[in-house]
Image: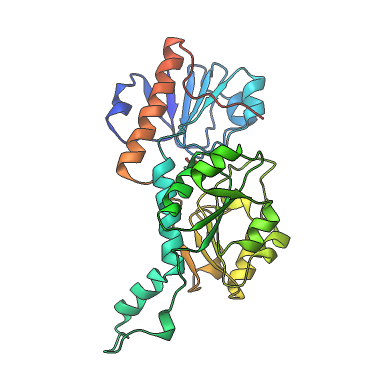
Length: 308
Ligand code: DGY
């Protein structure tokens, strides 16, 4: 099976594939021979599919597949797969890192030390942060990653609120120690809000300007999911006004980050690194390769995704 890949993926399992060719997206020329496309974040729409008449599989490296036009793929009988499960821990760890960095002003403290402004005194007012332990955390989306965040946050004795399209059975809520809230109520009540819903038509700008306005003054907003889930200009305005704090790993137009954010002390910025540990990235390659190998052998795909 001829595979066209936007890059070499990390880890030894990638070398198990026999017939891989690399391309520089976007694809511009017709390739009659290609049966599988391996991508990460690149757009795959009708125009790309048109160039690949023999395509059977688009294998996405990552759990989020919002760059892939599922309806166009389905219309051509092209399957789509992703790499769920193996990146939950790393992404949840990053959400916690952003919560801690933002609430405890870790990045500002680092800059303060490096600037040589740290005198002999004990740091008081300037770098006082906000408590993480015992704070109320609102989790928007309680799938695999949101659940991993909840488990970690309970170690900080946080009060855990969650919103999910379909509420969990009460016994699952009790086991996880989470309380359901409607989204608006969660935003009003939480001291920290962390977003873990996938980007889809129904979640684009789920956190719109009105909802950003519901956040408590001084609240910490963390996003490791997708930038477009939030009304980014409204979020930037709230940060510029100093009304809230944030930890942001994702942006609407990556790698471009709104210029206003770059000089703000109340936002911690990371470059979409939720899954970026050596171990997790290798595990993602394993899942990607499993899906490609299954397609090549005509076996059922381990991780198919479908248009909802
Ligand atoms: C994912 O898995 O969706 C990560 O955000 C990488 O795109």
